[in-house]
Image 1: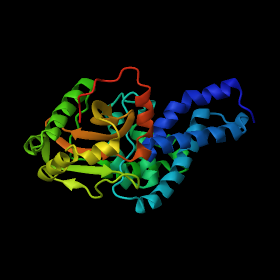
Image 2: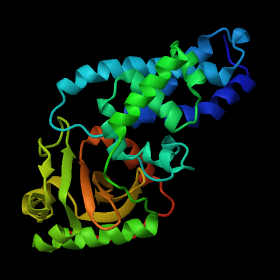
Image 3: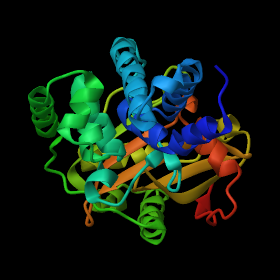
Image 4: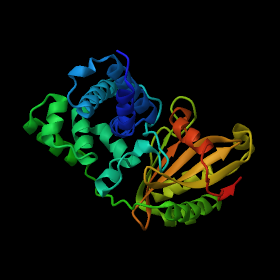
Amino acid sequence: MSLSTAEADLFESSRGRLEAIAYRLLGSAGDAEDAVQDTYLRWHAADRSWIETPEAWLTKVLTNICLNQLTSARARRETYVGQWLPEPVLAGDRMLGPADTAEQRESVSLAMLAVMERLSPNERVVYVLREAFGYSHREIAELLDLTESHCQQLYRRAKQHAASDRARTEVDAAAARRVIEEFLAAALSGNTEPLVRLLAADAISVADGGSAVAARRTPVLGADAIARYISHLFRPTTAKRAYAGATPYFYAVVVNGAPALLVEAGGRVYGLITLETNGAEVTGIQIQVNPDKLGRVARRWAVAEARPAAIGNW
């Protein structure tokens, strides 16, 4: 059945919300886009005259698509090369969805998206729809074809798994720039002491290169070990410059609500280093260099109307 203009407009008006739900569920902007496009194809093929509440119908279809993807993703994770991290998204991207409450902002942080990998598919759906989008347990039960009491149990379990004793500080662009400038200066200093002073004693660093880029395959634990690792990573060498093919420049950006260092060379985004902070120290570092997970950031960076000035280069 062909879509009327009104039906096409209705879907497009829902696309941003659907993308935001799918991104939180899948931890991948690319997979979220695919899930929303699949939802569109099913909307196009459906007998829409029988659909009383299009928003609920679209959410249910999208949720089922994501549940199937989450089930298959668990099998893919078992063969993933090295450490897996969620796909980062630049501030201002509609994929991040609503950000009116602390819960909504926290639900899309890279740390929380990584934590949600430990949840069962149903727990993840219930948590995201309840915590980030304000769906009632009754509404979620109808979407998942479960009882309301079962959804409440799933939500309680998800909350327990997702709870963290690490306080997280939200930042704006100006605050992010200050944090990143201090981090970059320490990383380029050639000494580990400035980095150690920035890091929490129990900080954790994780790198994701997938199968395409060489990256450390185990987490780095503790301020001293991370300082040595970062200092070595930022030491310029002929091999690193040759790999980039041009002078690498560093930019301070905001990614998933956290300060991040974007590395660009010759017009190509090579990596993002995201810092989790508690306002006083850096508690976590996520290094994303897997090109498959930098595509959306690279596309948005390429067309950005007002880029921040570079804060350093090699």
